[in-house]
Image (cartoon, rainbow, N blue to C red; front, side, top):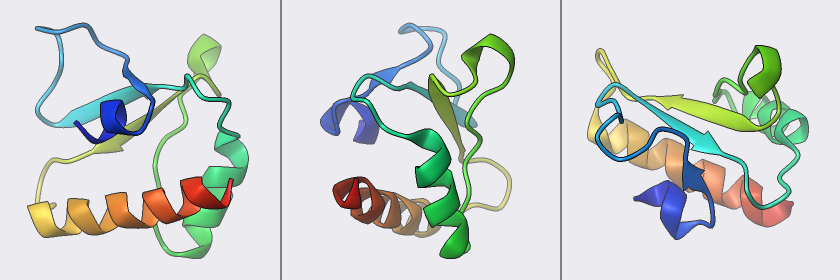
Length: 85
């Protein structure tokens, strides 16, 4: 829901989405390299795709020992960085 509320699209169609990973299509001109670097400075990370998808989508993992409050904290930091541009 975070992706859609923030002007992005989910990469996988309904019915093909995973519970362990969310792939988000860039639809708002976000500079993923700059965003990834700024998040890294704050000790957070996401994957910005590979191959022909590099720079057009990013992935957020929410599996293993990641707890809901940790994911929420990451999304809050991501919101802050997206507002910075």
